[in-house]
Image (cartoon, rainbow, N blue to C red):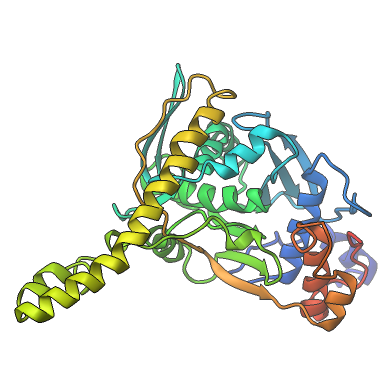
Amino acid sequence: MVKLPALILCFLSAFCVTAQQLKPGFDAAEYEATLRRSAVQVDTKFRGATPKETGYTRVYRGKEVGLHNKWDLWINRDTSIMVINFRGTTYDVDSWLENFYSAMIPATGELKLDSNYTFHYKLASDPKATVHVGWTIGLGSMAPEVMAKVKEYRARGVKQVIIEGHSQGGALSTLMTSYLHYQQVDGNLPKDIVFKTYASAAPKVGNLYYAYDFDYITRGGWAFTVVNTADWVPETPVSIQTPGDFNKLNPFTNSQEQVASQKWYIRLALKHVYGRLSKTPRRAQRTYDRYVGKQAYKQVKKYLPRLEQPRYSGTCNYMRAGSPIVLQPDGDYYKKFPDSGNNVFRHHIFEPYYYLIKKTYSPVIAPDSKGIN
């Protein structure tokens, strides 16, 4: 048997590189790359920004649509993985309105965004699931273009997709993951495409039943929500739980029936207590829908004049979705990023997240990695 010289074997092996494979589970290096691409995505330069992205190349930038929404498409070196990266909130008024328009709508339904475009969507299989209306508008504005690109690159053999974003971009990445999953279920996308999601510094996008559904369809380590515990944005939107948010067999749901079986003086006392406990959150819910639903819609309509106002779900029991990755600040962190001053986004921008991910997961992040700070 003729033995090939070692130099020739090395030369041949260079052309036989195994394609990179996405694996379930949190990967700190993958998340660090999410921060890098998100920093490149933003139009406003942060301190020390323009990080050098070494593993992926941006091959497409989506059109600016909806309420100032935009996304980027990246491909890795061996063209085995594509990345969909959503831009976060900009300084533009309509971008902020997308956040504030936070009444809830059903997670399955339709939104008429324009006179010639109605967005039909399914984001959960549970009929009790509800989602943030503003970010669903953003999702619907970008969905046709994202779907077209996913199909285009699937035809080229790309079957692995990372969906990611920071802040509002993280919220949109969560909803897009649900949307693309149910597009697969309905036969509109090949079922062999694998999706992995990194929602960085993301606010809450849906109610408890949406979160249940999202965590179920991404079970096994395919979707993560990364949170700096000093950051207030992941605490939003405001959550209000009323008796209408409970499952049918919850004792609070059937309290009237249970109270009716008690003696008259017990019934009187229980009705009084139950009325006091339920009246306040119900009133708060109505106020919430009035200001972040109907009033916010009037402002949004200035930017999307043909948007039809949807019917709101009458709930805002917001919950986080995705497997949590908690970044916990310590004393050194607060020396670098003081918990004081006028900058309310001090703990939310890229630098503190990059600092914490390096400090928490430094052994698995490449030492030659060029950072944001």
